[in-house]
Amino acid sequence: MYDFLLTPEEQELKKLARTFVREEISSDFLRKMDKDEIPYPREFVEKLAAINLRGIRFPKKYGGREMSWVAEVAATEEIGCLGMALGCAFVMPSIVGEALNQFGTEAQKEKYLKPYIEGKLVAAEALTEPRGGSDFFGAMTRAELKGDHFVLNGMKRFVVGAEGADFFLVYCRTNFDETAHKYSRLSLLIVDKGPGVETEYMYGLMGCRGGGTGRLVFRDVKVPKENLIGEIHSGALCFHQMMIPERLTSAAGCLGTWGALDLAVRYSNRRRAFGKEIRKYQAVNFKVADSITQLDAARAITYMAAKAVDNQYPNVRRLVSEAKRFATEAAWDVVNNAMQIMGGIGYTDVYPIERALRDTRLGMIWTGTTQIMNLMIQHEYYNQVLDPSYDRRIMEDDAANPDITERCFTDEDMLDVFDGKISNPSVQ
Ligand SMILES: Cc1cc2nc3c(=O)[nH]c(=O)nc-3n(C[C@H](O)[C@H](O)[C@H](O)COP(=O)(O)OP(=O)(O)OC[C@H]3O[C@@H](n4cnc5c(N)ncnc54)[C@H](O)[C@@H]3O)c2cc1C
Image 1 (cartoon, helix red, strand yellow):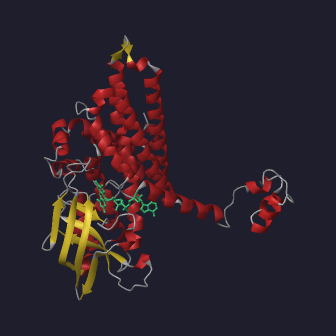
Image 2 (cartoon, rainbow, N blue to C red):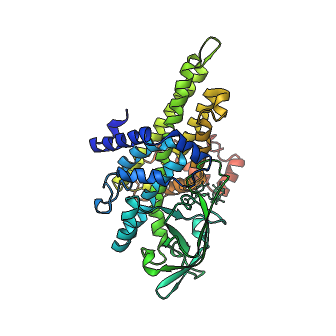
Image 3 (cartoon, protein in one colour):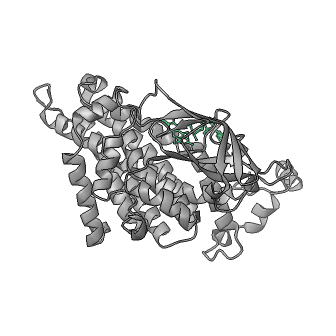
């Protein structure tokens, strides 16, 4: 239905992802993941690799398809109906691959990016620490350069894929000068799973189970100097670049809540109450109308952001943050509505609506919370509007009495208002 947004090649990719989701992933597999009986879905990764569904945007010479961001969003919204853990396993090459492709050396691309896209290796990214995720630049994991290698010590947590990964991208402090700007404190290292790297699977997650989320502890890990991505102390540059795939794929994955809405629509078409199908009640069918409208609005903003990234448009960070915030919130509303439409049965595990609800809640927390998105969005928008080169009509010029309004910005003017020297009611 949304194929008009896509080129013929992108439509083919979307169809491939749709068929894959329908035919290759069994319900039993999803249930086992949700019960934590599968710690990491390696089999899923290998199946994706077999049909070249990893590394969609990356160069063909490393096994990718060299396609657009729009193509990746289209495929991700199909895969997204499988839930957060598989959605994340699907998009992780886009995130980890971004850093390797943009900043990695040729040797790093051959050694890590290529086999990663081919499904021979699995990777995870480690930003969040026990002391906090939002305050990313305050990271305390440290890597000291000693000759030809770094010595890495520290802890990360909530790392999806920690359990299955063969290597990690780890942000760590390398500049110990206390006066250093936060943007020149960190570096990004490729860390192989090996001596000194401990992983611990996290049981008890509300959702996103079976995705290998775990803790990582690094104890005197020797990391070769050639595993540094980009320049030393330039982790901020990598971080800002990686946040594009992190957030855009979070938005795109949440579009996969179409699956939960479809389920509720079919259910309401056959469930009867007071002698007729519940879909005939406006209280039910308006929830469907609200949900599909929300989802389409989320789709629109996500595709717009994808197109903006494809075209290297300015203000990309704001658009991507808006898409992440809006799509994750819309997805939550959609699944919540789906559960309400289904009544009590929705609250059981008879249908996977409760799993979708548990999963979807994560969208507003990971890859930067809604509040952190808001920080970004307002910051970028203020910069844009207050830039002297901003060239749109200035609405203040249409004010009936601009002098009075401006005068009241000082305390002295406010006193004039109280003293009755200024009587314009719009000022008071
Ligand atoms: C299942 C799961 C998987 C995850 N996967 C990964 C992964 O693969 N790799 C990884 O590195 N991390 C991962 N994360 C971590 C995730 O990105 C963080 O949980 C998230 O960034 C929030 O960090 P925090 O949990 O430390 O919360 P905190 O940073 O402690 O924030 C707590 C609350 O304070 C608010 N807050 C904090 N600072 C501000 C501020 N300045 N203004 C307004 N509000 C603020 C936040 O919005 C939030 O509501 C995952 C988390 C989960 C739960």
